[in-house]
Image (cartoon, rainbow, N blue to C red; front, side, top):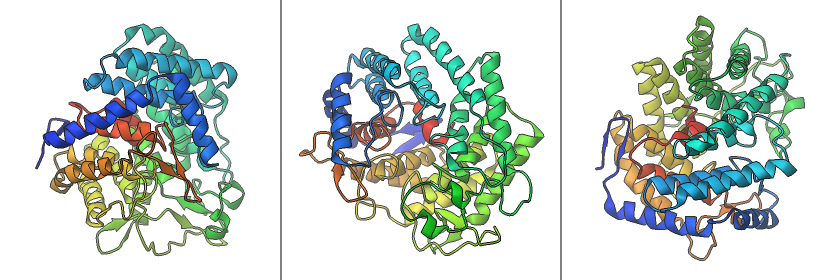
Length: 443
């Protein structure tokens, strides 16, 4: 068994470390130049309507690839990785000239670009002035686009991790010395999330009503009267993780503590049990009166974005922020239930970060590093091996995603592409917890 000490992993399996380094080396070589990566992204869009390339976004553009080169440099895989990461950030900023970032969101907006730039700045201090300007622009965006506080008009993009205030708040909490407008934006973001958790209305404030359902097939059939979302990427767990980040960043007021407690309680109340342990559904439907009507979940969605693994990660973030051993034990129990379901390529058909096996590996690493889950520590090497086994040498980026129609997509990006897999492999062989994990766990 590998050992885990301090606040991160000591991954001692040299065979797996060597394989991981070789795969990352191949991926960085395939994604060496921003113009070429943009071409790869555009080819991915041609392969499937589910693929998105947006040069300036963290999730689907150059900033995610910049992080790959940065962490490859830190791991000694590529000698010029820091310089290359700066080139990708320049390309991301350049992309905003033609297509300005319209919103503050983490995976598709200004806060995601800022998160990547802040990480690179640690190795390239000359980015400090650019980052300060970007942070101020982010603050103005947040303050100029706060969601309405009207019961029944809440949409997931108002508050979620992907494009909403939970993800943006996660980044804002990482700024060490914010200027007054950044602090104002942080305060406004916290206040909105607190408001979402307050009151005893039926339906609850954070419910997504039919008029606000995402425009994807099946949602209206599944939730004709609306629902409460329990995915890490778009639901209550993201609110939990964001409020935990605020608490850890010093926003220690009674209102924040009570809001975090309410959100955690809502999560715990929604958990079911399938014999392996806690299991979270994608969402809890509302009935015609607006009351929540849980229905049995017949399986766990094995991913970071939805399912028990992401929920367990959110609970762990809250437990660590509050230093709550009881909640930490519940988080560990939830993730160990995921391990008892034995996720493998038979269950998870892609390697990618958001809804694939890499997301599970990152959650496992997070729990292994706590030193409180021997099961996670024991499982991680095999899971890393399984992730490496997804590599297909016949694909240009080794780790294709899969579209809704079953088509393979050769995506270079972080969220649904090769960059996310590369960052995952670099995380488990790193000597400290990667700063980009804030995008997954908001801390």
